Length: 238
Image (tube, rainbow, N blue to C red; front, side, top):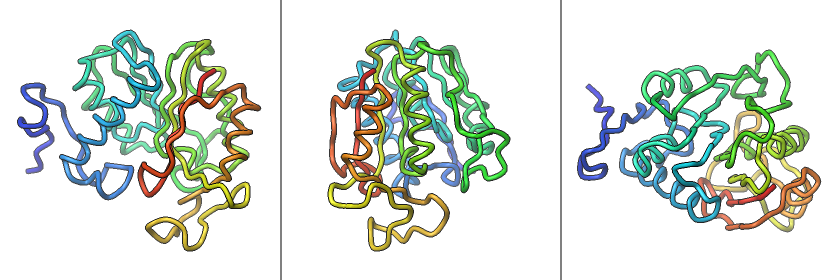
């Protein structure tokens, strides 16, 4: 039987359930428990350093999958003021909701259309499932890497609306300098062959940053190519 609990040598006495391998998004390296946990801890550390994550934070995990970040936050803090994970994939979200819901942790399934992850979704991209000015941090790991530019513009504005003044967005995506403004599944790019719709959407760096600016978000931190499959990290402020 698969052991859903973290290895004691990694998590001490803090038992945190881990999703089965088939539900782990974010790259094949997250299939191993040690890499899954290390990735969660790495992102929490980055959120603390660059986005001010603390026990009083209200965080929206947009595209939460089976709850990798929730595992990391639970290990680091026990709980925060509000962790809200949202996703369009029922299998992943249902596992997270069943196994990771706790005081300070909640999960919401949204039926938004996406050409690959939810092609029969009932609604078009528009707002995020949270009131305006209600969150301190919006975390989006490998979400913009699977959205076309039109939807990116919609969601950047939605992120601005969701954040409190001075709130932060923490994103990973594919950006390069000398490329067209937007490319879906670019050939001979990255470590794998992109095969399915919106498998990889790459943006020209200046173009993405212009979209951020137009949405009222200021780039505060950038790290090139250090995330999954060569994605880059952005931290933006409202």
